[in-house]
Structures are given as C-alpha cells and as structure tokens.
Length: 341
Image 1 (spheres, rainbow, N blue to C red):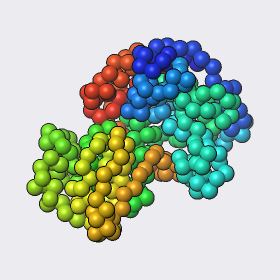
Image 2 (cartoon, helix red, strand yellow):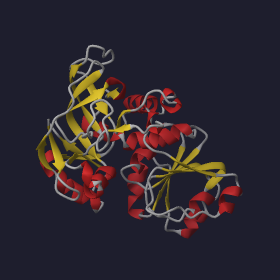
Image 3 (cartoon, rainbow, N blue to C red):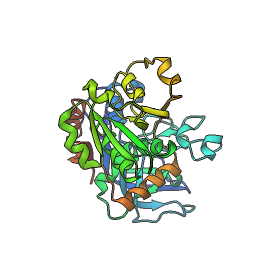
C-alpha cells in the first residue's frame, strides 16, 4: 500500500510504501476515498511513541469495497462503506458481547499505532490507498450523503452520538453542548434532530449564528457570568466537547437534578470539582470515548435518515501537513477531510 506517513514524531507526512496483511476469510478490503483529520491524529503524529513510527494516521474513513473474503456476508465488491477508529477487539469479554467493543477488557485494536491482533506488528491507518478490516468493524455508508462529510462521523460523530443516546437526549429534555467546533457542531445537530431543546455554550459570541444554523435553540456566551447564572438547573445533560481546562462550576450549576455532565474531550489537567456541586442536585460526571459497533451503526443510519454530515473542508493528500498545521492553530470550520482518490 501507499500511505502518508510521518517518519518520526513531528515530521511532515510523506508518501510511504508499506505492507498490510493478506485478507482473511472474514476481511474486507476497502479502497479509501476520504479520511477525516482528527485532533488525535495530530497528537499521535507529533507527540506519539517514537517506537510506533513510521506512522500512517487517520481513522475516519469512507471508501469502496474492492475485495471480500469467502466468509463475508454483509458486503460485496463495489459497496460504499466506512471504517472508524476501532478495527478489532477480543470479541468474548462482557463488554464486547454487549456491543461495547470500544470498552474491550483487553483493549480494542486501534486503526493505527497499535498491535494487530491478526498478523502482529503495528496497525497503520486510513491516510492510505487501501485498508484491510474484519467485516464486523466495517459499516455501510449512508446513501445520498457527501462521502467527505460522512468520514468524520466515524469518530466525531460516534463520540458525540453515544452519550446523547446513553443519557436519554430526546423530546422533553434539554441538552447543553459546550463548544461549537469539530465535535460540538455534530453534537448540536444530533441533539436537535433527536428532539431535545439544544443549548450551545460558547466562549465566542461570533459563533452564535453558526450554532443556531446547526440547530441550537439558544446560545449562551460562557464568558458572561450573568448569562451562565441564568442557566441554573436548566440542562438534563451537558456534553463538553472542548477538551479544554475549563471551570466546571457554572456548568454543574446548569445541570438539573439528576443531570449528567459528560466529557467528550480530554482536558490536559485533572478535574477540580467542589463535591457539593454534585451532592446538591444528585448530579454526576461521566466520560465517553468513541462507540461500539451497534451504536456506530445506529448513528450512521440516523444520519442517513436525517441528512446529517460533518461540515468539512476537503484537502488533497499532498496538503495533509498543511492541514495539520492549520488544525493545530484552530484554523478550520469544522473538520478537514483528506481526499485520497
């Protein structure tokens, strides 16, 4: 295969020829057409374990099936498919059997930078021309949607969809989304389409119009103390998509009784929480990370039914390094999709 690999942490991605495993009986070979660029790709390529390099990143893929193993039942050559950040798991632990492969007790097989359970060696990701994946971790791509916009659904979409469903977002509930960015813009679309009253919390007043266009019923400027005070016990669920070291106190105050604050982004420092902010109102803090196979399938079907994709800027593979630089400084609205055709 040919992929766009960094030879060492911090080096610019460049074409690299490498070998993938031979397809097995349950494997699907996918020609990658678009692959989203995620902040975790940036972190891996710039700050990852040097032992994992050369490294091909990318874990938000859409493409076309070019070959299938003899035991593959769900896909055929020519099918439009998608592949996400998990391409394997032990398959036998309670979590895997419950469709929570992302929580596999032996740790899931990641699309890149992890041990390959099948062939050994290190997995390589989707910034490449083809990938070989067990059919269980291949998804039908929704018909009629822009494939470049579908690609980020495999990470950003799954990561925000899963907690919205787990914690009951829907009619009669109020969902707050912190951050109007790569994750947040999809969380707003999902919450609105699920029928929840949707409140966007943003530190940037300039993002108000964009948030409303995405489906937010209300926009709250988080840097305005009076606006934040007015949200007391408003939200049943607050989904923090920022990954920033923010003061949790005003958001926990915005939770209704029995409300849940969910971390979809990972702050750089340990959380600082006043225990009374949880005790009073019997609130909770939860985490979320990607999604299992059933939730990912459900999310993609929902997107097909409601016409939901990510807002993307498409860049050619030769400009992957430039896109990484821009992502590092926040110069994107809202995601990049790399064209690998």
